[in-house]
Image 1 (cartoon, helix red, strand yellow):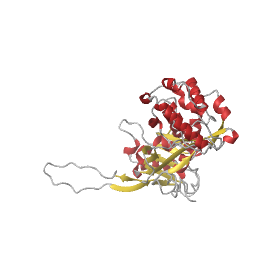
Image 2 (tube, helix red, strand yellow):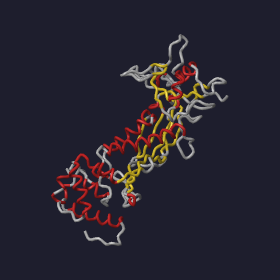
Image 3 (cartoon, one colour):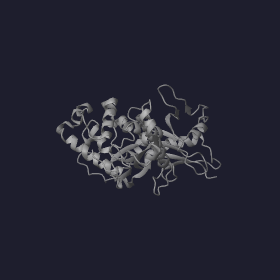
Image 4 (cartoon, helix red, strand yellow):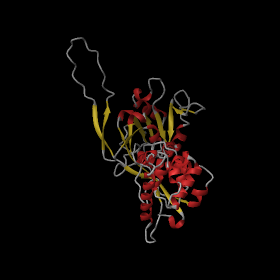
Length: 392
């Protein structure tokens, strides 16, 4: 491919992208979902650009199942990201999961990578792991109904009887926004990308996913509601079942836990199969303090977990998260309830990996960032209750 010394890298990438489109245009219908890379090789046996040859060689060496890893290891070859979607198995449109630009664009990433990131986020965010999550196509404000209908019930109606007076559910409305959570940019050297003897894709997915998961957990529990989510452990967000007695600024009593437990309607606590659907949420320091609490018969409220069962408090499992507030005057250190029924998390499709090709190029590094646009809301207030430490 002829080049002009005055071209910028972005212009060069644009030209290379056009070249790839032209060369693949000769193949026609062979570029379909599931087309193996080796099937493309004969038609691209003599690509004009050395960068394209480098990528194809590495793709072939890595095998068709490791396209994304091969791409990561192709750092510094100045290959346009659009070329990647052509070289990987599958039609270009099927891989277009993010916006592409010459200098700071995203790449289309594999389902395996996305699943690994999601697993890492769930492992560091108890909210993502236990709440109900919905995905939307855009980040526009999403209005959702909230309801508390536990006080209403049906009746027996006699044949030909006058219809009973209608009973409206206690409906409200909440808005879900799309706050921007980022892992921050992680610079990685070309040497590590190209020479690493381990599964770099899995390593990167875990690192970025855990960063974003910690950020979401922090704000989903402690956010003020002003330009950030209204955190579940922020006073006033979840209904208070018990406030500690005067002097309990850093302690909780067995009776307090029992009040929080029974503050959640039984329908939210146990499923039709008799298994718990509610759980406790607290940090490790709070858990340490409640492990020594006993009921009126001297039996510990805390039950250690085993090989098949998790640790439990008053018969219900515990989700430990360091982002829950510690016990202090007026703090909300304990939540209890059915998170799946009570909390709705909104994620925006298109959140994903961004790759910075040139930002760190002078230092022979490539930058990676993972972005999540999300928010949450309490959609059923009856499903959750909280304990609040005394103010003094």
